[in-house]
Amino acid sequence: MDKIDFVVTWVDDSDQVWQEKRNEYQPKLQADKATSGDKAYRDWGTFKYWFRGVEKFAPWVNKVYLVTDNQVPKWLNTNHEKLVVVDHKEIIDEQYLPVFNSNAIEMNLHKIKGLSENFVYFNDDMYITAPVEKKDFFREDLPVDMAVLSPIVPECYGTANYQVNDMEIINKYFSKKEIVKNGRMLSLKYGKNIIRTLLQLPGKHVCGYFEPHLPQKFKKSTFETLWQKEPELFRETVASRFREKNNLNLWLFRYWQLASGQFIPENTDKLGKLYSLDGNNDDIFQALRAGKDKIMCINDGFEVVDLDRQMSNLQESFKYRFPSKSAFEK
Image (cartoon, rainbow, N blue to C red; front, side, top):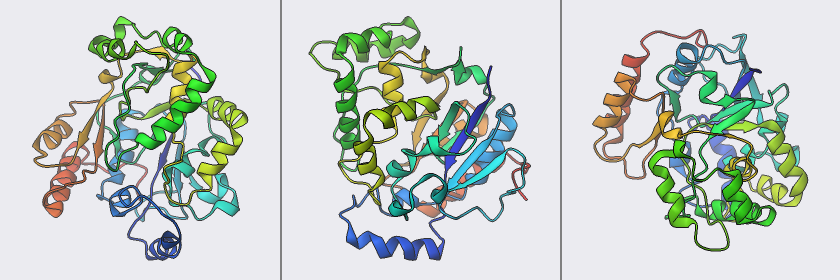
């Protein structure tokens, strides 16, 4: 199989230079208070464990690209042979900088110099906590994924606006018949998730896809194809320094791969699970310590109770799972 790269984005919200830069621009725009506020940038002090997971459980990875805004963690070994630090200015036109909008940043991942055709994109809250293989992400030179239909839920502070914008493009280029056929929607590999699709089959258009909140597997050429088809819409998103309701988001590229049939069907529930740090988080800490899931997305909750205690418990659980430094650390 061809090489597979990992890409991860990260921001140091405690950096005073970055804070001053953000504060200079934020009042000038009507940004979503939740998605552009403190929660979006809160650092739990666990990023080094992301690298430990990669080294221990995915040693086959070709390159790891860390995308940042002129920042690197103090503990990071930037001389690691597999690590490439990518500054925003290397992939985003100067006229759009500085940018504090993950949607805008992620639209440009394909511009990373040297990035392999097949790559996996991680948010910094998605950790590899048990062994993974190349075939978990790509098979037959195609991303492994699950095409399951699901309605878009308009939650407060959610991503519904972006998903609707994404689906407008999908429905523009694909009929529902094509989407259902190309997505192998009734594949038994999807397990009980088929029920979601069956409930959405009536009607003329596809309302949305189920989003598993796990690392995304992409073909770099998918980005290039969509930029060629909708350059103005992409430029509008890239021009948004903070998240705005008219933005597209990264999931569009995944949706395009599903709608066009450019993937291998599999139940992605086998790959990992989404956890939210709300309320009592003992289940998260226990799963992490035991390596229950191959990948854990540990999402920062909106109602974290006793932040300091939860942060300490999370860090201790990571330390238990990954007690030794990786070569990515100084």
